[in-house]
Length: 114
Image 1 (spheres, rainbow, N blue to C red):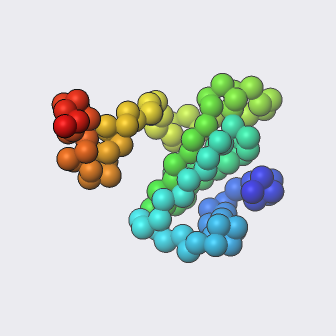
Image 2 (cartoon, one colour):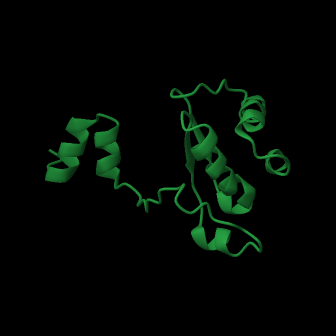
């Protein structure tokens, strides 16, 4: 995956390359493109500026350590092009609600196991 970002960061080149790499058709406004552990490939983070400016119809999410990204020499954060959101893990009960397992979640919350 790293090699995809070694060349030109144009969206016109990246979308077909990501589609081939993932084996998934990437459709604007229908596909969420996820760059996981982006600190390992800082140019993937830089590409977010290209997506924002040239192809805002694509939904792109990047995850990773901001500290890891900042430690790469010469890295340029796409200021004003990225919205940052700090996420926290779900509790097991929150997970059950997300999976629509309401009865089990309510039983765990009430601690009534009879």
